[in-house]
Image (cartoon, rainbow over all chains, first blue to last red; front, side, top):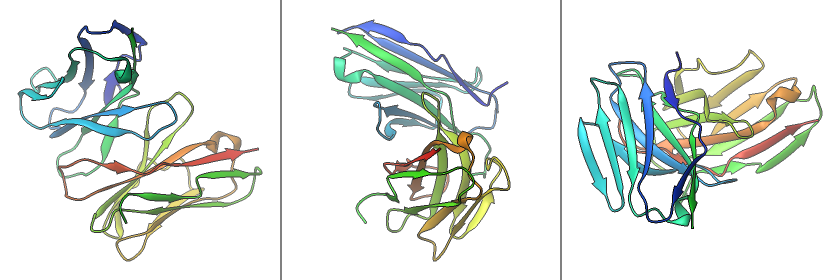
Length: 112
Length: 114
């Protein structure tokens, strides 16, 4: 089992709709969770971080964390063509270890 | 500096040659990470530094790969006797605070081994 798993997609969503991206992780003691966006040919940039169970909202983005079920998700409301990118889930797998493990990413395409 | 700086941005080398990739993190960031990204793939963890020490180097693919960090700042990733499968973008990132906070990535060094 991979430490961090994501559906590779591609995921196609109409403009204005909600895009839902999911990520599962293997280690129950994971502490920190991040969503990064990566445009083609560019470096990843942070979208959201979440550390506690529940929802965290920032503008059109909402991160959801459920530690009991070991999943973290990202919702993008009112999707825009500029949201088309690969979204990477990252997890601090082991408490006290600063290693940040990334999933393989989900490629999202917003259809105008 | 203002951001994470990596050099060279592009490197083409012949199989069997050694290469050095450099990373200059954001000033004051204590943690520094190296990742590798092959075409169309996710980020593969290589190694991270806390200060000058490397608590986790579990991702280094083979003993041809090594990395060091000096003065708690600049890091160098060295690949000896390069192979074609080493071709990838090597990304460096730095982080200000232990355990929390985002990683800031450099623009990467694209390595092509002919």
